[in-house]
Each structure stands twice: as C-alpha cells, then as structure tokens.
Image 1 (spheres, rainbow, N blue to C red):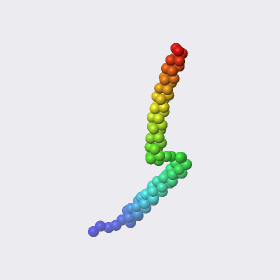
Image 2: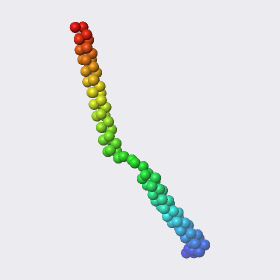
Image 3: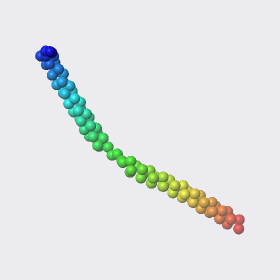
Image 4: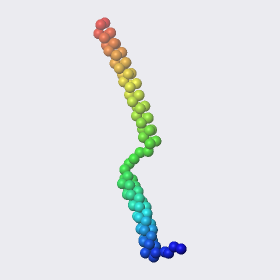
Length: 90
C-alpha cells in the first residue's frame, strides 16, 4: 500500500501548472513573432515568382531583338559604305 505525500502532490501540481504556462507563453511568442513579421514584410513590394519569370522572359526576348537589329544596322551600314565607295569611283 502506497501512501500519498501531500507535499509531493502539490509539487507535481505546481510543475504541471508551470509547464502549461510555459507552453502558452511559447505559443503566444510564436504568434507575436509571426504578426510582427507580417507587419514588417507586408510593407515591401515583393513580386511573385510568376511575375518575375514573365519579366525575365520579356527581357530575354528584348535582348534577342536588339541583337537582330544591331546585325541589320551593321549590314545596312556596310551596304551604304559600299555604295558610297562605288559612287566615289565614277
């Protein structure tokens, strides 16, 4: 037969109560941290991954078009230089 020591029972109750309080404080701290993060990062203008990918594709297409136009201009300048040289001999 086991006798229950009231002092030990009270100590266990205090420990259980403290554990519950600490757990509650931990949850509250986590919620507060998440709320603060939302406040801080909510003010920034972030773009979505889809928007970034779309702009990246547009920039790549623009670069390709610029290279094509540079080649055409170089070709036209070469033709013009050839015509000027041909007219100067006549």
